[in-house]
Length: 81
Image (cartoon, rainbow, N blue to C red; front, top):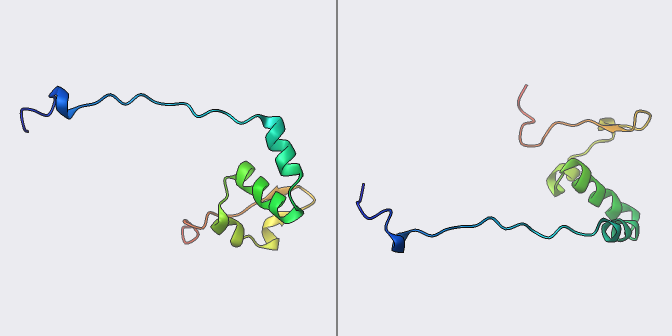
């Protein structure tokens, strides 16, 4: 290894930064004012971690309205057993 890897000119300190958290009442108000379809997409993204690809592959058979559940495999791992 080069002998100067730990030299002060070649290193720097990186301090972690914390993002400001949104005010939840503002978030709820914003989501409540969305049209139904956009509210659905927003809630799926926020509560299930879904992105546009995940939402696009949803099927009716994956939703159990009686149990109020959504069951689906990830798109990335759909070929896995």
